[in-house]
Amino acid sequence: MARMSVQMWTVREEAERSLPATLASLKTIGYGAVETAGLYGLSPRAMRAELAGAGLELSSAHMPLPNKATASATFAVLTELGAPAVFPSLEAEVFADDDAIGRAADRFNAVLPIAKEHGIELGYHNHWWEFERGPDGRVAYQKFLERLDPEVTVEVDTYWMQVGGLDAAQFVRSLGDRVHYLHIKDGPINDDADNQCAIGEGKMDVERVLRANSGVRWNVVELDGCAGDIWEAVRRSFRYLSARVLEGA
Image 1 (cartoon, rainbow, N blue to C red):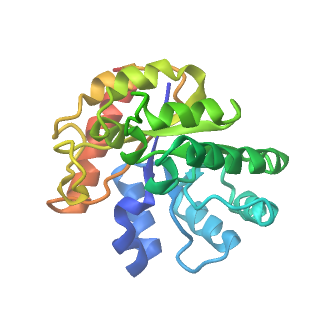
Image 2: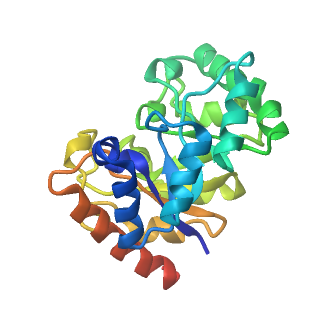
């Protein structure tokens, strides 16, 4: 059964004001783990101590993809932080044509062995722009996956995948054991991040997504923005998702 985490980007403004208070609030709501999106000026060791002090586990991290020259130092930081997995993203122009897609995949493949040496799972985190179709009618994301080493896993942002025009649940199912993490969010299913909402209150068929792949290890709550109070959305998202995860939705 997949476990629950929350992406710190969701409460980024609150964390910048007071990381300890933000972590304590997440724990009070019921979250037991977070996915980081930066260290708020702290060292990896200090950030790890803040999480431990709040009683929170680290499910994963989100950060830019290092190049081969800097990869060892980057993955050493993640090891010190205690992150078991990291999921970088790439910009839209990377998916403009087949040659660019191939070069992007090669960048991941080049640092994969270094990540493995440090015991870090390396994967890719999508947005919506990866799902444009080329002249051949094929989705850029699919071409990208084919060029990636099979040991590069994926963290599927199910909302952005749906915005990109794919059936997120169906695609998550098709990925089989390559997908270990899902980002779960909700809203009107468009690229306006500021209008996202508490999970279960938008247009996403969240329950179908949760049922799509039994191999998923973590469901990570993330709201890029929110039309209302972010803390209330985070609370309602926890209540909705935890009930369905615990009930095996």
